Image (cartoon, rainbow, N blue to C red; front, side, top):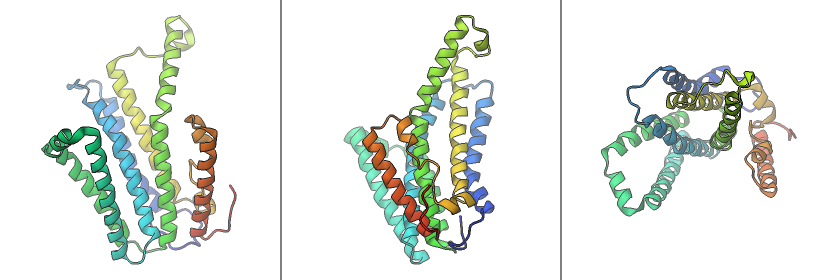
Length: 277
């Protein structure tokens, strides 16, 4: 995602398409898997895989925030890359310490000694590190604008993940339960509802994950649009998300005030006069 400077107000559709490409490819793969009629392996590994996505996406949101911070402190390509790698090293140390706390010393050692662990971790880590280094080293544009875009997207990624975890699944499950009750009661308007099965649960879960990545692609594209350039406001910048998630009013007020301050910083980075949206 590159920008020619803070005076640009039109949408950068090339950057938007490139930013959205990977999440859309992941979504397409999930849809393809969901449409497969039967799987030979019914051990439930698909559920474990989707659960692993939650901490992985959380880490990706943190890495995006670190990348935005690296652009904010941009002095030269080499300095930015070193800043990014140092920040990633600190994050990795914190994640290892948290993992050791959760698993215990014995479980942590067994996990770290497993070849399967490194077969999963190393490719993901390599992609994350390479992607950030390339974005920083070959960047030619206004780093302040780029930092504003990436940090806004990173914050939205985190909020999207939180919304996808809670309360959306509970709401969808409650809606299904209500409709299923009406179907069992013989109500015609609920007759279309499919009966519950493990196969349908698998397909629904994969479709749900695909919708998450489509939304993530939309967020990645949005920060390259004229709408964001004209306001600096992110998608989940309002106080409604905290209300949906049941957060206390005082916490929602603090979050909203913090977001307004960060939005003001983004507007300045984009070369805008203060705007109240």
